[in-house]
Image (cartoon, rainbow, N blue to C red; front, side, top):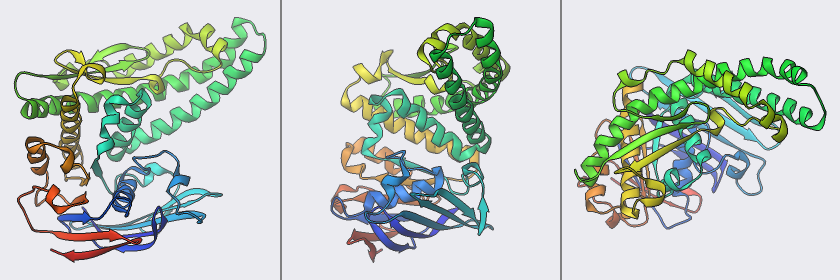
Length: 385
């Protein structure tokens, strides 16, 4: 599946744009603030249903407009699909596939798949737990629609349960009354929460194996990368490198979360919100046993993130049986020759790739096929193969 046509209306810096990219390699050249990243962001939006830069759709609307519109034609063998996203500040978001309105985001995600590299990727290490949870949710959601449904159910129940907790905090009730009011929400939260964590662990066990191998190729045999899932109700779960080691079942997760919700009852009523669950979990990464967030050098941190992204491409290709769209946003100039060469290997004949740069001399791909484009003035124009 590749992106055949992209139409944008009132998206960021684009009032109207029709973009028909090459099915293989697309190099977008332009000065900073000319729309290169905006274009890649809109392509990623097709895959994830959200921006990789912000959680607020209102920030994607062109200045002076009420909303934005994205329409894409996706061509595969032998299928063709049209995907549309429409956002209005007053009415919210709606979507269509092949002209038919879909009710939920889960019904739209998966027609396009994309992995994006950008200089901001270091936030996967340096950012807060929310950054890493958001990353997991976006990437798993692209290939697993049931995960998105579980996530939507969980967030809905979590919000309703927190409403009950806030009401209980303001009033005086017996423990039996608190249990009576919260137990129905506990059961629903535990069921959806267990589905979320189980899906995360299934993905991460496979993903960690690829990231470990790639990191050693980049950094050499003297260093190693390990990862663990920091579960708020199950404790630290090392991400061993074999699928067979994933011994914690969904049933185990559900039972443990339900127990922890009960054990945390007094604290939660006192605080007025839910303190355990996948919305409180985190992902930790270690270089040679030391937390990469605090002890890894800048070069090591970049190597970790690069290994994570390359492993993500491989994992996603295995899951969907086709390569995802590859979006490289001004990253080649950030990498030394070895890392750039490693990343360039992903740019193959079977991967539709979009690369942004301010200067063609930043690229060292050793190839000239594909199409070059120039961004500026709210437009994207071809400047030759």
